[in-house]
Length: 148
Image (tube, rainbow, N blue to C red):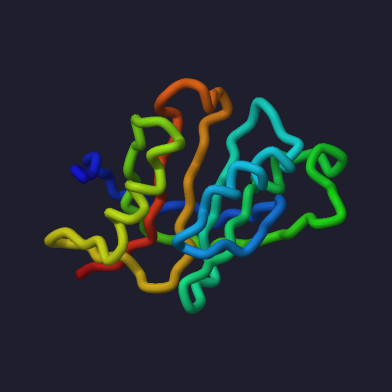
C-alpha cells in the first residue's frame, strides 16, 4: 500500500474521555460498534490505540474532555485518557473508514530518513467535526515519532 504523504506536527497534550474496549489486531471489525456507543456529534473525535499487548490493544473512542459537556459523553463505561505533548507524523487518510486498517498495517514499524515511530506509544485517528462515515476522507492518523 502506498502511504499518503505526511507532515510533522508538535501535538498538544490531550485529555480525552470516551468508551473503550480491547481488540485483537486480527479482529478489529467490532470497532465500528464501539463508535456507535459514543454519544457525540458535531465535534472532533479521536480513536486512540494504546496498551499493546500480545496481539491485542485497547481502542478508545473519545472526545476532548475540555470540549465535552459532562452529560454529552457520560456512560457507565466512560474512560479518561491523558496523552502528553508529543511529536507526530500526521497522515491524511483520504479513503473510506473501511480501508483504515490497511493504513495502520502499513504503518507498523514505519520510519523515514529523519523520524521513526515511537514503539508502544499511543497513536490515534483524528476525525473532523464534519466527518461523515459515508464519505471518504475527514480522517488523520497521528503517529508518535522520534528522531531516527
